Image 1 (cartoon, rainbow, N blue to C red):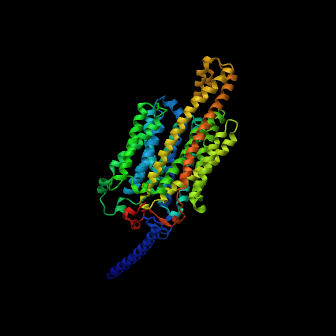
Image 2: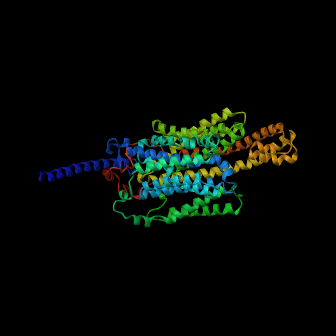
Image 3: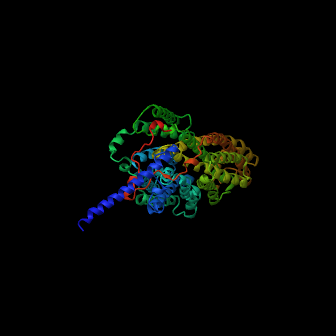
Length: 607
């Protein structure tokens, strides 16, 4: 028996060598096939993964964590945004209410690129666990807030956490074969249905059906969602860590070589630029120092960032230049942002159209009708992910869906208070088609890059481009709508009210009552009668409808640019392979499956 042990050891060593040789051979074949398509950085393909890998608790649990995180990330804003007025009436009033939305937008837009790059370099697990913890803590702060300032602090934490939670596209894509990326992202979109899809309806339900809980109920609900996501990240998500990615490298060396100058320019530039856009025209006048100072400093920092990216040579740049030199990637990112601008056109205008033209004073009905935008966009995102690969030629899918969806968005300008069915029909089809566009382009961000070990960097950059583009377009929509309403309402409402018998001295009070929108506000107008309210309301609807039309006309410019750029979006049929960029490391043997900072081609060959 004493002599059998060495024999067993030799046999075991021999079997390990055979297995390793088999892996190395298969891995080399993967790399050779990848290089034929110009894409590299894969760690395995379906044939080299353990049997049952895609049905294991760790893989399915990771997808559940990603999905619940997405739900929490979108709901953090979607649940609060429709009821900010109610919140302000309870714990306000505060002149800083708009910051509740602003800080969320800023944290997400800036954080996406940082999360993508840092997790590529140092590993994803603890960043995403930290994001889940921030989302949970922020939800607790918001649920217990006794002032708007505290609510802003909580929303800042939620926004920082959402920067990881909304990075779902590249975290999902790297875990599945290339050929499964479109539909796997579509599966994750299912989790966003109760978040962005029915956000307004859920918020209104808490306020109107559970008045004892009220608006705080939305944040209690959000706590539960974040806790479920956080627990799943902790238990199931084991991606490659720093040691696996870089083997014997010292973490401190990577920290020292990181691009801090680029990070400062990026963070300061994008934060100040988006802050200036968000403050202008609402919180402060556009010509005020409070608006122009952050806006101009932000632009200067972003220009400086451009020069830094192009001419500086940090060892570990925040934004690698070769990614921005990849034309198909940039086209996909910009079209993604322009598609998002269409979403915001609907998201801004449709709830107002519902409240003014179609809800007839029923907040529950109005909440459900307002949810059509989010629900149909998600439906389009799911359908786009499911059918992108079977149909193929995704460039032409983007061209067609964006062209038709954009045309129907412009056609919404023909709708008014008497054409609700037509408006809903245009809305449903347009949102589904543009959601399809978004889904395809978002996944293309992870497919169109050359080095799949930079999937987080590329995915984060593309998502930040989307967020920045959408914010600019959203600002333009708000400015156009505000200016147009300031013209149409004074031109149409006072004459109709005066003709119906309202004293001219009460016009200002009447317009104020429309702004407040409560029966008590109308009853307080001197000389008001039911017939005057009816005449003035009809004129108010017509004036508002005229203003909404301008937004839909404006959207044509953005969709037109998107359609032109969509011709530069890549077709990726040849990249629908079995290659997998990353495998989970829950088993001890998995470490061999990850390339250790492997570069198959030189940086000069990357595009």
